[in-house]
Image 1: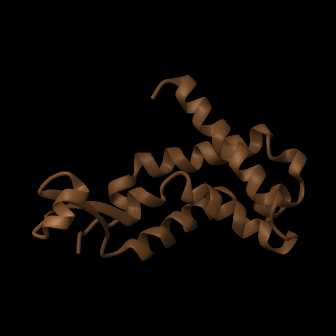
Image 2 (image 1 turned 180 degrees about the horizontal axis):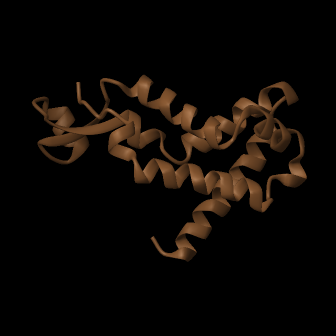
Length: 137
């Protein structure tokens, strides 16, 4: 990923954080901040995989345009993986910092928040296979 793509992705994430927080009650903003980051950085990679299936029903074959289709399946330990991602995020952004950002919308574009999100993403990528159990069902 080039630096421009990385900047665009982070810009989209910050814009999404701003939008999500502005539409929430103050008491829900910290959890919204955490879950917006997780949902838009790592969630699909640690919770779902696609499995190729052979279609037997003629209507299904016509609908999918062939004899095979991909279906989403959850990893066996998806919930543990999500909990681990939240634990790692809270290590980089403790509750007190998350509360500060959630209660100060003017700080959402700060370098501090950007650096916290970047550190979170970097740690996940660097240790992905040691942190997450991607056992298929």
